[in-house]
Length: 282
Image: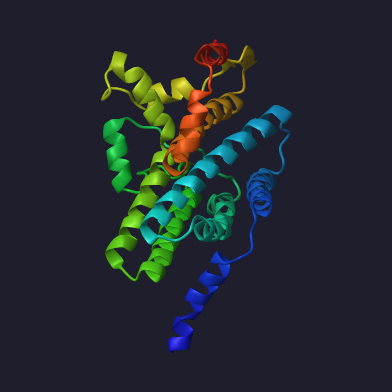
Protein backbone atom coordinates (compact mmCIF):
# COMPACT_ATOMS: atom_id res chain seq x y z
CA UNK A 1 0.00 0.00 0.00
CA UNK A 2 2.82 2.37 0.87
CA UNK A 3 4.43 1.72 -2.51
CA UNK A 4 1.15 2.42 -4.29
CA UNK A 5 0.74 5.65 -2.31
CA UNK A 6 4.14 6.82 -3.53
CA UNK A 7 3.37 6.26 -7.22
CA UNK A 8 1.79 9.73 -7.79
CA UNK A 9 4.77 11.32 -6.06
CA UNK A 10 7.21 9.45 -8.27
CA UNK A 11 5.30 10.41 -11.42
CA UNK A 12 5.39 14.06 -10.35
CA UNK A 13 9.14 13.85 -9.71
CA UNK A 14 9.67 12.41 -13.18
CA UNK A 15 7.73 15.32 -14.67
CA UNK A 16 9.61 17.87 -12.57
CA UNK A 17 12.99 16.47 -13.55
CA UNK A 18 12.26 16.14 -17.26
CA UNK A 19 15.23 17.47 -19.28
CA UNK A 20 13.30 20.31 -20.89
CA UNK A 21 15.32 23.23 -22.28
CA UNK A 22 13.87 26.55 -23.39
CA UNK A 23 13.69 25.59 -27.07
CA UNK A 24 11.72 22.43 -26.30
CA UNK A 25 9.49 24.33 -23.87
CA UNK A 26 8.77 27.06 -26.42
CA UNK A 27 8.01 24.51 -29.14
CA UNK A 28 5.72 22.52 -26.82
CA UNK A 29 3.90 25.60 -25.55
CA UNK A 30 3.31 26.97 -29.05
CA UNK A 31 2.19 23.52 -30.20
CA UNK A 32 -0.41 23.40 -27.44
CA UNK A 33 -1.80 26.78 -28.49
CA UNK A 34 -1.93 25.69 -32.13
CA UNK A 35 -3.56 22.41 -31.09
CA UNK A 36 -6.21 24.32 -29.11
CA UNK A 37 -7.03 26.46 -32.15
CA UNK A 38 -7.11 23.39 -34.41
CA UNK A 39 -9.48 21.59 -32.02
CA UNK A 40 -11.81 24.58 -32.06
CA UNK A 41 -11.54 24.72 -35.86
CA UNK A 42 -12.30 21.01 -36.19
CA UNK A 43 -15.36 21.33 -33.95
CA UNK A 44 -16.56 24.29 -36.02
CA UNK A 45 -15.96 22.21 -39.19
CA UNK A 46 -13.13 24.53 -40.24
CA UNK A 47 -15.37 27.37 -41.33
CA UNK A 48 -13.82 29.79 -43.79
CA UNK A 49 -11.64 32.12 -41.77
CA UNK A 50 -9.42 34.93 -42.98
CA UNK A 51 -5.71 35.02 -42.27
CA UNK A 52 -6.38 38.03 -40.02
CA UNK A 53 -8.76 35.98 -37.88
CA UNK A 54 -6.21 33.18 -37.48
CA UNK A 55 -3.46 35.64 -36.55
CA UNK A 56 -5.55 37.60 -34.03
CA UNK A 57 -6.98 34.40 -32.55
CA UNK A 58 -3.52 32.90 -32.12
CA UNK A 59 -2.07 36.09 -30.61
CA UNK A 60 -4.95 36.39 -28.15
CA UNK A 61 -4.77 32.74 -27.06
CA UNK A 62 -0.98 32.77 -26.85
CA UNK A 63 -0.83 35.85 -24.63
CA UNK A 64 -3.75 34.73 -22.43
CA UNK A 65 -2.28 31.30 -21.70
CA UNK A 66 1.28 32.65 -21.35
CA UNK A 67 0.22 35.18 -18.72
CA UNK A 68 -1.73 32.47 -16.87
CA UNK A 69 1.35 30.21 -17.07
CA UNK A 70 3.65 32.87 -15.61
CA UNK A 71 1.25 33.75 -12.79
CA UNK A 72 0.73 30.09 -11.89
CA UNK A 73 4.51 29.59 -11.87
CA UNK A 74 5.04 32.53 -9.51
CA UNK A 75 2.32 31.43 -7.08
CA UNK A 76 3.33 27.76 -6.97
CA UNK A 77 7.06 28.51 -6.70
CA UNK A 78 6.57 31.11 -3.98
CA UNK A 79 4.54 28.83 -1.73
CA UNK A 80 6.02 25.38 -2.48
CA UNK A 81 9.61 26.67 -2.68
CA UNK A 82 10.24 24.53 -5.73
CA UNK A 83 12.54 25.73 -8.53
CA UNK A 84 11.14 27.53 -11.55
CA UNK A 85 12.25 24.68 -13.81
CA UNK A 86 10.37 22.06 -11.75
CA UNK A 87 7.20 24.14 -11.59
CA UNK A 88 7.46 25.01 -15.29
CA UNK A 89 7.78 21.34 -16.24
CA UNK A 90 4.69 20.39 -14.21
CA UNK A 91 2.66 23.22 -15.72
CA UNK A 92 3.72 22.30 -19.25
CA UNK A 93 2.38 18.78 -18.75
CA UNK A 94 -0.74 20.19 -17.10
CA UNK A 95 -1.42 22.56 -19.99
CA UNK A 96 -2.79 19.64 -21.97
CA UNK A 97 -6.00 20.55 -20.12
CA UNK A 98 -6.52 23.56 -22.39
CA UNK A 99 -7.61 21.18 -25.16
CA UNK A 100 -10.64 19.96 -23.19
CA UNK A 101 -13.13 22.94 -23.05
CA UNK A 102 -14.14 23.02 -26.75
CA UNK A 103 -14.54 19.23 -26.80
CA UNK A 104 -16.73 19.22 -23.67
CA UNK A 105 -18.84 22.11 -24.98
CA UNK A 106 -19.26 20.29 -28.29
CA UNK A 107 -20.68 17.17 -26.67
CA UNK A 108 -22.84 18.96 -24.09
CA UNK A 109 -24.35 21.20 -26.78
CA UNK A 110 -25.06 18.23 -29.02
CA UNK A 111 -22.72 19.55 -31.68
CA UNK A 112 -24.26 23.03 -31.77
CA UNK A 113 -21.42 24.56 -29.75
CA UNK A 114 -21.32 27.40 -27.22
CA UNK A 115 -19.76 30.84 -27.59
CA UNK A 116 -16.76 30.73 -25.28
CA UNK A 117 -14.86 33.93 -24.51
CA UNK A 118 -15.17 35.98 -21.26
CA UNK A 119 -17.79 36.86 -18.67
CA UNK A 120 -18.89 40.52 -18.69
CA UNK A 121 -20.35 42.14 -15.55
CA UNK A 122 -20.18 45.10 -13.19
CA UNK A 123 -18.57 45.22 -9.76
CA UNK A 124 -21.50 43.72 -7.83
CA UNK A 125 -22.01 41.01 -10.43
CA UNK A 126 -18.33 40.06 -10.45
CA UNK A 127 -18.31 39.58 -6.68
CA UNK A 128 -21.33 37.28 -6.95
CA UNK A 129 -19.85 35.36 -9.87
CA UNK A 130 -16.59 34.82 -7.98
CA UNK A 131 -18.39 32.79 -5.32
CA UNK A 132 -20.67 30.95 -7.78
CA UNK A 133 -18.08 29.73 -10.30
CA UNK A 134 -18.86 32.48 -12.81
CA UNK A 135 -22.60 32.48 -12.13
CA UNK A 136 -25.37 31.60 -14.57
CA UNK A 137 -25.56 31.15 -18.37
CA UNK A 138 -22.80 28.59 -18.98
CA UNK A 139 -23.86 28.46 -22.64
CA UNK A 140 -22.04 31.74 -23.37
CA UNK A 141 -18.90 33.35 -22.03
CA UNK A 142 -17.48 31.00 -19.40
CA UNK A 143 -19.05 27.82 -20.74
CA UNK A 144 -19.48 24.33 -19.27
CA UNK A 145 -16.15 23.27 -20.74
CA UNK A 146 -14.28 26.27 -19.37
CA UNK A 147 -15.80 25.78 -15.91
CA UNK A 148 -14.76 22.14 -15.98
CA UNK A 149 -11.25 23.27 -16.96
CA UNK A 150 -11.12 25.79 -14.10
CA UNK A 151 -12.29 23.26 -11.50
CA UNK A 152 -9.89 20.59 -12.76
CA UNK A 153 -6.93 22.99 -12.80
CA UNK A 154 -7.62 24.14 -9.23
CA UNK A 155 -8.00 20.53 -8.01
CA UNK A 156 -4.79 19.35 -9.71
CA UNK A 157 -2.80 22.32 -8.39
CA UNK A 158 -4.19 21.60 -4.91
CA UNK A 159 -3.17 17.92 -5.14
CA UNK A 160 0.31 18.85 -6.40
CA UNK A 161 0.79 21.36 -3.59
CA UNK A 162 -0.48 18.89 -0.98
CA UNK A 163 1.93 16.20 -2.17
CA UNK A 164 4.83 18.65 -2.09
CA UNK A 165 4.00 20.58 1.07
CA UNK A 166 2.13 17.99 3.16
CA UNK A 167 0.24 20.99 4.57
CA UNK A 168 -3.49 21.42 3.98
CA UNK A 169 -3.64 25.16 4.73
CA UNK A 170 -0.87 26.16 2.31
CA UNK A 171 -2.20 23.81 -0.36
CA UNK A 172 -5.64 25.42 -0.05
CA UNK A 173 -4.01 28.84 -0.35
CA UNK A 174 -2.31 27.82 -3.63
CA UNK A 175 -5.62 26.48 -4.94
CA UNK A 176 -7.53 29.65 -3.98
CA UNK A 177 -4.92 31.92 -5.54
CA UNK A 178 -5.00 29.82 -8.71
CA UNK A 179 -8.77 30.22 -8.88
CA UNK A 180 -8.36 33.98 -8.39
CA UNK A 181 -5.96 34.11 -11.36
CA UNK A 182 -8.37 32.17 -13.57
CA UNK A 183 -11.35 34.23 -12.47
CA UNK A 184 -9.61 37.57 -13.05
CA UNK A 185 -8.38 36.50 -16.49
CA UNK A 186 -11.80 35.10 -17.34
CA UNK A 187 -13.45 38.44 -16.55
CA UNK A 188 -10.60 40.74 -17.56
CA UNK A 189 -12.48 42.98 -20.05
CA UNK A 190 -14.83 43.94 -17.20
CA UNK A 191 -12.01 45.47 -15.14
CA UNK A 192 -10.62 47.38 -18.10
CA UNK A 193 -14.04 48.90 -18.84
CA UNK A 194 -14.72 49.69 -15.18
CA UNK A 195 -11.33 51.38 -14.92
CA UNK A 196 -11.79 53.46 -18.08
CA UNK A 197 -15.47 54.41 -17.73
CA UNK A 198 -15.70 54.38 -13.96
CA UNK A 199 -14.42 57.93 -13.49
CA UNK A 200 -17.08 59.40 -15.77
CA UNK A 201 -20.00 57.04 -15.33
CA UNK A 202 -19.38 55.78 -11.80
CA UNK A 203 -17.49 52.59 -10.96
CA UNK A 204 -20.57 50.81 -9.64
CA UNK A 205 -22.70 51.78 -12.65
CA UNK A 206 -20.57 50.19 -15.36
CA UNK A 207 -22.34 47.04 -16.55
CA UNK A 208 -22.41 44.26 -19.11
CA UNK A 209 -23.67 46.49 -21.94
CA UNK A 210 -20.85 49.02 -21.41
CA UNK A 211 -18.26 46.25 -21.61
CA UNK A 212 -19.81 44.80 -24.76
CA UNK A 213 -19.90 48.26 -26.36
CA UNK A 214 -16.22 48.73 -25.62
CA UNK A 215 -14.97 45.33 -26.80
CA UNK A 216 -17.56 43.78 -29.14
CA UNK A 217 -17.75 46.50 -31.77
CA UNK A 218 -15.82 47.24 -34.99
CA UNK A 219 -12.83 49.48 -34.37
CA UNK A 220 -10.03 51.42 -35.96
CA UNK A 221 -6.70 50.29 -34.48
CA UNK A 222 -3.24 51.25 -35.76
CA UNK A 223 -4.93 53.05 -38.69
CA UNK A 224 -6.59 49.79 -39.70
CA UNK A 225 -10.37 49.44 -39.74
CA UNK A 226 -11.38 46.11 -38.18
CA UNK A 227 -15.04 45.47 -39.00
CA UNK A 228 -15.40 41.89 -37.76
CA UNK A 229 -16.27 42.06 -34.05
CA UNK A 230 -14.41 38.82 -33.26
CA UNK A 231 -11.23 40.12 -34.87
CA UNK A 232 -11.70 43.46 -33.15
CA UNK A 233 -12.14 41.76 -29.78
CA UNK A 234 -9.10 39.50 -30.27
CA UNK A 235 -6.96 42.44 -31.35
CA UNK A 236 -7.99 44.62 -28.41
CA UNK A 237 -7.34 41.84 -25.89
CA UNK A 238 -3.98 41.05 -27.54
CA UNK A 239 -2.87 44.67 -27.11
CA UNK A 240 -4.04 44.75 -23.49
CA UNK A 241 -2.32 41.44 -22.68
CA UNK A 242 0.87 42.59 -24.41
CA UNK A 243 0.98 45.60 -22.09
CA UNK A 244 0.17 43.42 -19.07
CA UNK A 245 2.87 40.91 -20.04
CA UNK A 246 5.40 43.73 -20.40
CA UNK A 247 4.56 44.93 -16.88
CA UNK A 248 4.91 41.41 -15.46
CA UNK A 249 8.28 40.95 -17.18
CA UNK A 250 9.58 44.33 -15.94
CA UNK A 251 8.48 43.60 -12.38
CA UNK A 252 10.12 40.17 -12.59
CA UNK A 253 13.36 41.68 -13.84
CA UNK A 254 13.29 44.20 -11.01
CA UNK A 255 12.78 41.49 -8.38
CA UNK A 256 15.19 38.84 -9.69
CA UNK A 257 17.73 40.95 -11.63
CA UNK A 258 17.60 44.32 -9.91
CA UNK A 259 21.07 45.55 -10.89
CA UNK A 260 20.64 44.69 -14.56
CA UNK A 261 17.16 46.20 -14.56
CA UNK A 262 18.38 49.48 -13.05
CA UNK A 263 21.24 49.54 -15.52
CA UNK A 264 18.71 49.07 -18.32
CA UNK A 265 16.61 51.97 -17.02
CA UNK A 266 19.64 54.26 -16.94
CA UNK A 267 20.27 53.64 -20.63
CA UNK A 268 16.77 54.27 -21.95
CA UNK A 269 15.95 57.48 -23.82
CA UNK A 270 12.74 59.02 -22.37
CA UNK A 271 12.03 61.34 -25.38
CA UNK A 272 12.28 58.41 -27.81
CA UNK A 273 10.12 56.21 -25.57
CA UNK A 274 7.51 58.97 -25.34
CA UNK A 275 7.59 59.41 -29.12
CA UNK A 276 6.96 55.71 -29.79
CA UNK A 277 4.20 55.56 -27.16
CA UNK A 278 2.57 58.49 -28.96
CA UNK A 279 2.78 56.64 -32.27
CA UNK A 280 1.16 53.54 -30.77
CA UNK A 281 -1.56 55.58 -29.06
CA UNK A 282 -2.47 57.62 -32.15
